[in-house]
Image 1 (spheres, helix red, strand yellow):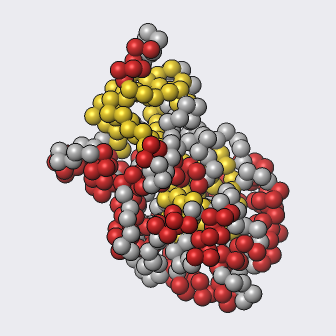
Image 2 (cartoon, protein in one colour):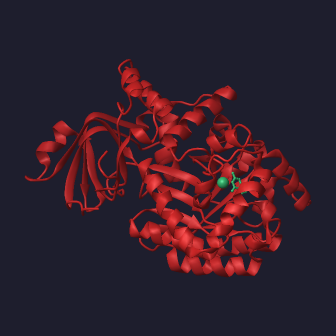
Length: 435
Ligand code: GUN
Ligand code: ZN
């Protein structure tokens, strides 16, 4: 990767958000012929090309992206890198799928070399799809998190990862103990959290595979390391929910289990949140806890339909995610597409602006990183993407009939995928070889 010029500019159609478009129509920033100015890997300013071009110092390199759409890089708020090789495995629902495919695949990550090789492929795939930040599960093995962080650091990426904590109800070869999971997580936090652009997430897999002692340790890690995130799964599948009620007979709900151990809080990312009631949503909103919508996974595993209207009305933070390998695509465009269909099945609304907001600023807010990524506000890290609305013959043909921004974005999310990502910039440097 060639080092970018200290000051450079990109000319094209710009789209970014400063607020949730559902709440604030002025939160959408769209400029047909815009200029994005990048200095030392950060967004310096953006505006119309007519206004900004004359202000650039002579000799400033300007990359011509006219006819293409520039937006902040996508944020995938829930994904499992060790499941890369089992994506699209035919089978049953969540608990059987974990036993049949996931656990055997995760066993191989006891080898650091295997973790390194998969992490490299996985990061290539994220970048090809325009994803510049992800909240990533490793496996129970400490070296699997080391491998992921090291690969991300070499590429200068802003990534979040955590070692899975799992001390019961799983194969012996994937089991840690409450004490070892605490010690390994603490050591990983020490080594990686806040190093370069990397952040740690305490990662109890889900309540079914943790003892109460382990969940207590997870809460302790958060208390002892302010700024560290938490990621886990919740209310994804009805059999899972029944099992949680048996394992924690004192609990009032699935969310109550995590709440009991101090895990329901700002900086916590809860994957799925499908089978939630009003009390759950109220609690999520009151505590600033983020719900992560994983539509391709929820359809693939037959888990159920996330209700964005309800989450939004309750005031909860929501992010969007692929959940590979339960999810069936690395593409956040494909993920938006499926989120639209999930909303349709529930007779809910879901606009293209909702989708692109969730994949950028909405995700950044959920991760508590909106002061660094997710928009084109001055000072944000210059992780952005160039989308080609004419990337395929069908896109090109259908795009000709679009009139408004909403129509254009909707066609892009319904027909687009990795082919529509013409370039991904990390800190202002191109990460993909020319397409
Ligand atoms: N619940 C617990 N572990 C997993 C996982 O790996 N994927 C999904 N989709 N749900 C889970
Ligand atoms: Zn998951």
